Amino acid sequence: MGKFMLKCFLITAVLFFGVLLGMQRASVGMNHLKGNTDTGKALAIKESKGHTDAEVLGAAIDAKDLTAKQKQLEESKAFNFFSSLGEKVSVLISSLFRAVIGLISAILSQIFGSLS
Image 1 (cartoon, helix red, strand yellow):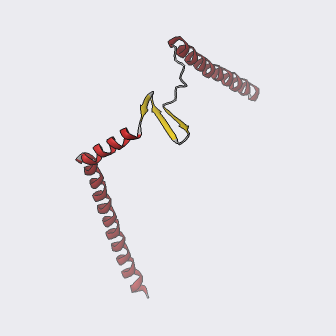
Image 2 (cartoon, rainbow, N blue to C red):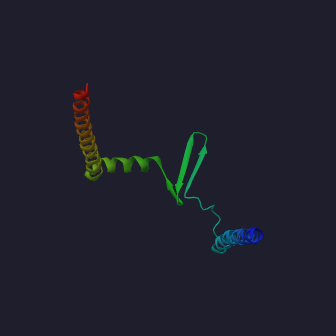
Image 3 (cartoon, rainbow, N blue to C red):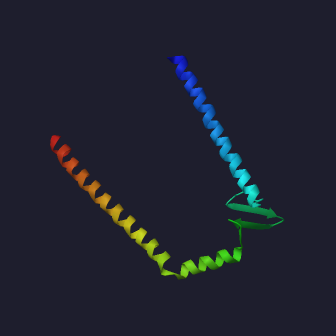
């Protein structure tokens, strides 16, 4: 029984490796047919003499674009709304847990205080 299980495991492992290898080869072949020469990375960062270039999915990103988007986010109230909503929820949960812990400690002090 042990030999059979070992043979089944080895055959399954070899076939699984073959499937993975075939998928990789098919991906490389499709990229070659499409004429794609890029590496398929979603984010590419290139550094050169004090200047950094970044590309996200083939689109160049500039520092000016990032500052403009940051200003746009700061001006929009949706970003600040969710931020303030999150702060209020966290304060509410914190105060709720403090009250529950205070109540439990008061009950325990009453119970253990009466034992002494």
